[in-house]
Structures are given as structure tokens and as C-alpha cells.
Amino acid sequence: MSDAAPRRVIPIKVEPLSTLSTAARSTVLDICARLESLPGALLPVLHAVQESLRYVPKDAVPLIAHELNLSIAEVHGVVTFYHYFLQERPGRHVMHICRAEACQALGSVALEAHAKARLGVDYHGTTRDGAITLEPVYCLGNCALGPSLMIDQRLHGRVTPERFDALLAHSREAT
Image (cartoon, rainbow, N blue to C red):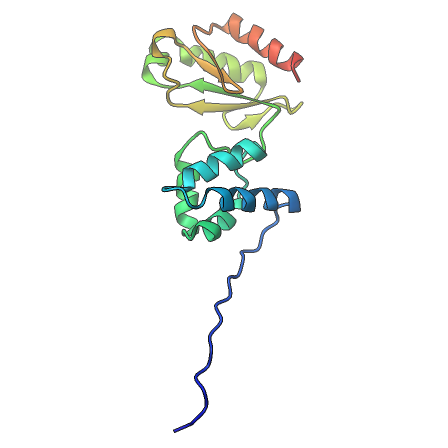
């Protein structure tokens, strides 16, 4: 038997490796520190990260998980479940086209085809000039005025191909 004092264990909090820029890493850490005490902090953190960085970088997921004491799988599951969260850097404007049944009944399938042809991209794609990222959404809550789309958080209803072209021209001018 030894008379030596028991070993003192010092926990070490190891931060996951990341390729985030110093500024993006700092932003994510600041957001986590500010919001971690909220009940169900993950969604507010993800929304704040997207608002600050315009998307949720893949390398932010392990960092957020670490800071909120969650598994990477939990954070990744939420980011990929909600179509609102972008995982790639978007264009200067983000355009969401509603794909819900009510909008489909009012012509969103034709609008979707027109938008893809006009922009030259499929969903989750960004135009060559970096102006527009096209995203699907499964309800904008504007069912009576479909087909609907949202550009940079601004909702538009009764969107025809002609109206789409006008909105697109306006968005490109605003860049």
C-alpha cells in the first residue's frame, strides 16, 4: 500500500478541429456562449449562426455540438432536417419556392420549371454570377395566394412566370 496522495484529475475540454476562419469560429463561439442557457438552445443557436454567417458551415456543427454538450449527430440531424438551414455559402440572394400541395395545385410546378430554366440551376444551386441561390421550401404559409416564393425573407404570392422574371430582375439590380 502506498502512502502517496491520490492523483488529482484535471478535466481538459478539447475543442474539435475546424477549418472555419478565425472570424467565423469566433462568431459561432460567441453565439453559443450567449444562447447556451436557453432551454432548447440548439435551434436559436443555429438560427443566429445562419443569420450572422448566412449559412451553417459544416465545420460549425462539431463546434456547436461541443459548446452545447450535444452529439455531432444531434446537431447535424437538426441542420439537415430543417430545409431552412443552408449548409453551403449562398448567393447574394436566396430564393425559396414553395413545393407544398396547395401551391402545386395553383401552379408551382410550372413556376419551379421556369425558375430552374431561367436561373440555369437546380435546387440548392447558385447562379454562375453568385447572385441567386435556389432552395425548395415545403410551406410558406401563404396557401391562398400560391404559388408563392420568398426572396431574402420577403414573401411573394400569386407568382406567375412573368412575375418571377420581374422579381428576378429586381433582385439582380439590388445586388
